[in-house]
Amino acid sequence: MTFQTKIKIGTLFLFGLFACAFFVPKGEMQTKVETAGQRFKNIKVLNDLPADQLGEVMNIFAASLGGDCKKCHVSNDKDFEKDDNRSKNTARAMIHMVFDINKNNFKGQTQVSCNTCHNGRENPRSVPSLEAPVPAPERPKQPEVKPTIDQILANYAAAVKGKGKMVSSRLIQATRLEGNGKSEPETIEQSQGKIRVKVIYPETPVTATYDGTKVTTVTKTGEIQIQADQAEQIKREAMLFANPDLKSVYAKLDYRFLDRLNDREVYLVLGTTADNQRDRLFFDKETGLLVRRVSVTATMLGAFPFQYDYSDYKDYGGSLKLPATVAFAMPNQRWTRKIVKVQNNAKIEI
Ligand code: HEC
Ligand code: HEC
Image (cartoon, rainbow, N blue to C red):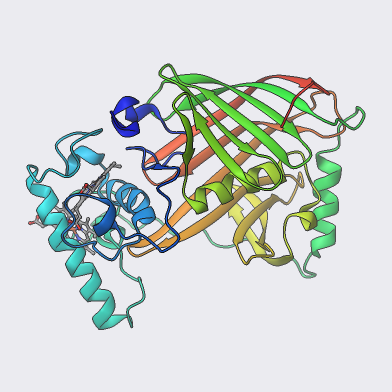
């Protein structure tokens, strides 16, 4: 039995994208970029798509059409190679159309994606709405003097300051609430830029570790390989955990403008890492806290965003407050982590 079929797949959302566990068993990793045509069984259009992008593209499809995998497949967790759902072939024609639109009109850049027309609906609306238009929220009045990065970081550091002493490690019990209403216990071991997150699914716990150098992911069947961009996200969350010194995470930080987020005014800062990965960081103007981070991966069929909303910052007895609630969102997948208990200076091994 393969890894894919052994685990009840729909629940193995370690990192959101594995609606069908697109893990590449370790050892089968190749140095040359493997294409979807090579890895999967019945690919007729996406032959040149890097195989690693397929999972994200499928989640983009599902989110763009406002459905799940069954919209185009016969099941939500298996037999994806079968062509027995008519919509799958319609989707193939649509993929051709999108490639042509971008090639013929936008110099081959992915300007038009499935979502451009579908926007969360099965059938795009071509008739203009007769509802009174809802005005797009205006950008708030910009500050006369732009805040400097140092000011924004100093406010953030002051805002997360706890009453206690420096903490060298933490053992955290949390609950992971899935978008479908289910929930699982989660434990987080954390120490200075390193993290181990264990999600205790009923079928098998899944553990993701960033040890300061690399990310490893393990289930009861052994080590599994996840995509590079997902590993990068795990690393970034580890580095940002209880660490207001963003200069240690990003090589470059640029203030962009004052924006609005959920009726709050926020400073938008663009963070660029040493290897040119970019994050958008949103700091609440009034409280100074980091409230959102957004990272984007490009795919052949449009952008795949990863979004993290940090809220409910609490003092757990250390020198830094932690966001008790973190909402994770990406196309077709969302979940929320809620901290239940924090043990400071716990004995952990990462
Ligand atoms: C809008 C339609 C659509 C949706 C929604 C969709 N898919 Fe697909 N999927 C396709 C098409 C079309 C192909 C074949 C592409 C080709 O022939 O190049 C495909 C192929 C696949 C394959 C490769 C199968 C093989 O071995 O050939 C997998 C795996 C897959 N999809 C998984 C998923 C998962 C998981 C979801 C839900 C997150 C999903 N798909 C949602 C249209 C869709
Ligand atoms: C230029 C606009 C446009 C774009 C871009 C577009 N679609 Fe469509 N799509 C449509 C329209 C319009 C229909 C409805 C056709 C109908 O009702 O006969 C449709 C229908 C579909 C259907 C059939 C829905 C059903 O009722 O079963 C699928 C599946 C689909 N699109 C998938 C996709 C995918 C996947 C992409 C991206 C690769 C995409 N579409 C991009 C316009 C678009």
